[in-house]
Length: 87
Ligand code: HEC
Image: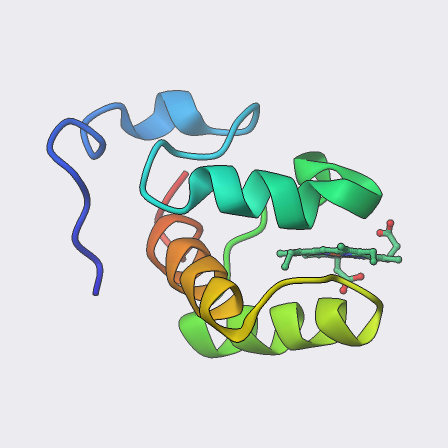
């Protein structure tokens, strides 16, 4: 569940703020979550899987549009790549 593609893990701190980590689901997150406020709103946010789930549910309540499968993929991406300890 936290597996990263080869090569994605090493850059570490260079990922600090500007962009989302390269990993499966990134394009989906950019498309769905970048719509209202851009990825800058959350690119530096670090949360647990549970917290991301709640956050994404909240965004859906605010009008984010995605299928159930897409929502799951988004939560998986966020939980794996924007988690505590990731810069
Ligand atoms: C329909 C519009 C919309 C979409 C799509 C959307 N958001 Fe938001 N989001 C908002 C609004 C409105 C706020 C609060 C005001 C602000 O910060 O711009 C917000 C704020 C946030 C915050 C700051 C904390 C908070 O709850 O206020 C985070 C983190 C966040 N969004 C993550 C996401 C993620 C992840 C996605 C993709 C699943 C997403 N957003 C998609 C409207 C949206």
